[in-house]
Image: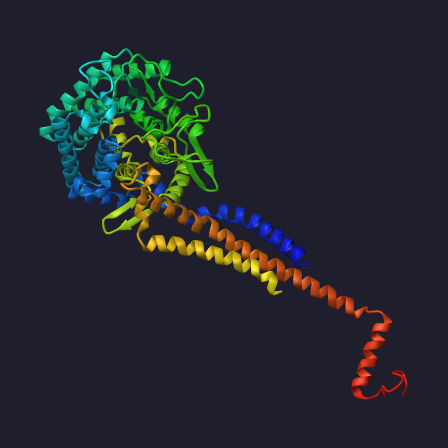
Length: 410
Length: 125
């Protein structure tokens, strides 16, 4: 009798759990859904609370100096590349903020200048390897003198963004020098591409360089559109993965793909190419969205690799949650791409996932995410404020008239 | 009935444990230690384990604990409804009880009131 009752009780408990589980899992996203102001583009005006918190945190970080922040030091010890990328995204975010909020422009420009000057000083004193992973030494570069396009391109993009917002005389010569280096590297290679590591050309680094060239063209009144068209043409012909139609993430100097389409870079590539070839960029985004984006129960995230390319995560990827395949690096950059292509539905799910799984920490210093790091927070800030700089580039340096985001709003 | 409330009580207790575990992590400021999710490995193995525990405690509190609490509520509701149905069937059954049962009830009532003298034959007046 007792055994029978026990079995009945256990069966009832299991049945109740089976009913309760989908009930709760389908409803939990409601508690993490983003506010309506989060999905408005720069044309809406005021920053969202999340963007303000992230901005305040970055401003505070650079007011004290990254050397004084334990989190920054830990991040750099994991991957020196993240140091440079954090600076780049912060400068780009501040450029957008300076264009959005003219009243705060002096403050934003001051911080941009501090970051740019410190970065240039670090590169000049220690060489580009200050921002590279140790394996840059393993072999000679295919195209000497060895130059990491990752470093040169992002430096050029930072300076170009600064000059586009408001020209600073001391940076005119620096911008020309940086962009000339980048152009020389691209022109040297058979793929119109430059190496970041020995015989490694990364699509994202080359895309950043194209953006830097676009910025410099507008600032300096020049035209390198033919070079940009050649790069895109080359990419269509040699750098597209036949299985997914997505751009590969990395290839040799001679043009052989080394890796497949990696979420932690390919979403960023799509965003960067918006100001190079908008149609090509949108196609890259839609493919990445289809192959890597996942929406479930009101949440969204991105995978690092498409199903056709099972691969291992590298140091840029961050860990991937098993079974779900959710990857932090890919998901963070998917926020940027979704915001810039006006994919509100995907963006809404991604922001819900951010609040659900990224451990927001808000204090007197601003907002950051416990599951992120300074570069991740900088990427998120940039994602939430991007728009004005791209609009200015698209309009040849003039004020906003044409919004790449508004075109694709969903 | 008490037996049927043991399971919901256990489910609720487990849900409470999960919630308290995360609350403790939050009050101790351990949300700072979950940077491992971005691939930023902490300096020590201890910090890594603390971070992992905090992550698991969070998902336990947000995903598992509410499911357990909901299941406990459903369990109690099912038992309550089943009990009412059983009592309703039982009282409906007693209104249509067979004749010998009714007579026995009347006899016991009469004995209690003294109308029957029970010595010898219980049917004698």
